[in-house]
Length: 197
Image (cartoon, rainbow, N blue to C red; front, side):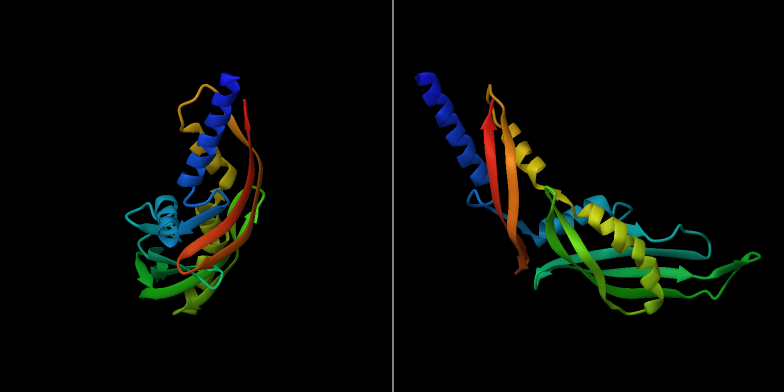
């Protein structure tokens, strides 16, 4: 009986610890804009704070830098600067040489898909030079979604694995609902089940 009481107490402690480390009550998840900005910087802007849109040559370069992330009106918003020089190499000279600095604002809608929080409906909201819109397509279609993808089950499992115990606790059911993005916070309600072995 003491063993069962000890296991029950241990499970209760795990649930309470999980609730405390998951930023609030057990059923809520909050991710601040600063965490999303760190994800972008760690995944994409790894070359002196730049993400290259083109291979650099003597006559051309284009990169995105200085991202700033905010969360509002149900969307993740990213403002950044694009610096570029796009010209043709003719012989040993660059023809049509012009350097540009372009301001861009993109946004995306956060959703729960499978067991991950991901971004959909990614779009350019503002761009100060339309000539750079085509270069941004790969950045929008592939790079941003890859950088901001949060595996919720894996995160919960990692929290549970960090404790000291002789038994294993597994997240066996998971659902995320009511995702909002307001006041620089992404907020979602979590429902999950735990099994101890």
